[in-house]
Image: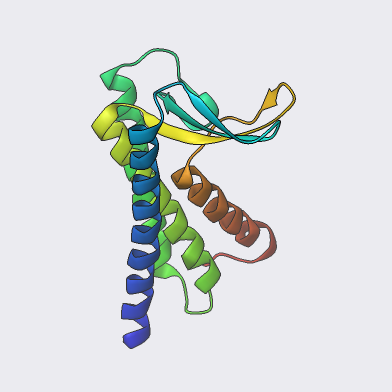
Amino acid sequence: MASIKNKWVLLAALSILVLILDQSTKSLIMASIPRNESVQVIQGFFNIVHLQNPGGAFGFMSNGYSDIKRLFFVAGTLIAATLLIVLFRKLPQEYSLLRAGIALILGGAAGNVIDRIRYGRVVDFLDFFWKDFHWPAFNVADSAVTLGAGVFLFYLVFKKIPD
């Protein structure tokens, strides 16, 4: 019984940690860097920027703003989160790395959903580039989702996820 409770406590703790890091870094950026401005950190490689993305990952559906688009992204995130929680419930004890990956995804998803609800956009601030090639700007939430998805993909390819 204790291990069942502990897995839920760890899910909540890791997800909340990601959420706090995400929202606090975004607040810091919004308070200190004007929108669409940047601060050079490593010349020719890395800047801190203040961008607001009305679309999804990598700017998907970023043209224009609408309440329908916001509803689409929020509803999609809530559906995905529900499916992940259902999977999380079914995972045996030995799947602790996959449970951590799910917690990262949930925490990151929550961070970006909060932005969508509050601003209609997601605040991005990490800008890596080389010469004229810029990786799309991202944030702590995006990093957590990507890392969690990588763990999930590892399990899909190399391990068996229980039915």
